[in-house]
Amino acid sequence: MTLLQLQAISKKFNDFDALNRIDFSINQGEIVGLVGPNGAGKTTLFNIISGRLKPSSGNILFEGKKINGLKPHRICRLGISRTFQSSRPFIKMTALNNILVGHLFGKGFRLRTQPEDVQMARELLEVVGIPHKAETLAEDLTLSEKRRLDLARALATRPKLLLLDEVAAGFSPVLVKQALQLINRIRGRGVTFLIIDHFLTLSLKVSDRLLVLDHGEKIAEGPPNQVMKNREVGRAYLGLQHQKD
Image (cartoon, rainbow, N blue to C red; front, side, top):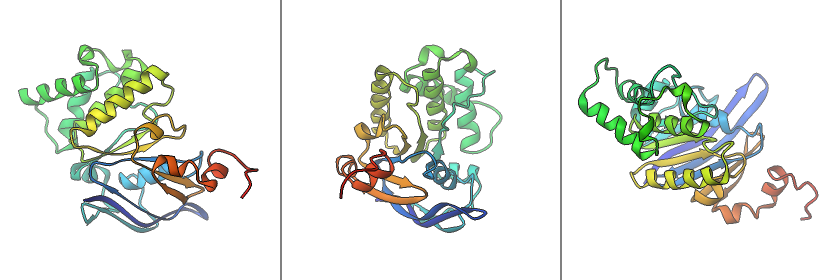
């Protein structure tokens, strides 16, 4: 079943075309990697899907319903959540309370927590592998732990589609392997993924498909092994400027 569909999405900043008529869709249960060089339009596309930006033209359909123009909190409550390239926890709050904020505000405003809310937050800490950090202030977590907390807080909104922005940036090979296992584990819980991965750290290993952008244009889409053989991808993304036709 098609979960997300973008129809000719364009975004202009003054005279600059950040995105130009992007068409693509994501099926329920898929992991799609969004890759491309710096300035390709990846973050702009995330911002449009999540409601931080409005497209200049085109439509976004989520579960068959048009969502472009909706506020970010309304899009979140429909089932789309995201993380950011730079970790953004509430640094003076514990890991547990960070997750509770995502749960209480992401699905509807509530001031009081219930025992089941706390249990859910502890379960998510377990899912992302940091249950022992429940009472640790976010500012005292390592980079890897903060990214895991970002993921848990996003999951607390109970998303159907999760947008991950450079979740493994700066990770060692060991941490990348752990991130791969974590994403696959969350996928098993019924979550669909769109992942920005500039350095292909995760995408080549975990994605069902890759979508490649360059200068706001879609230049390739398909299984990772096929996309990486594409000459346009080699030229634009990998910098193989002298590759022969």
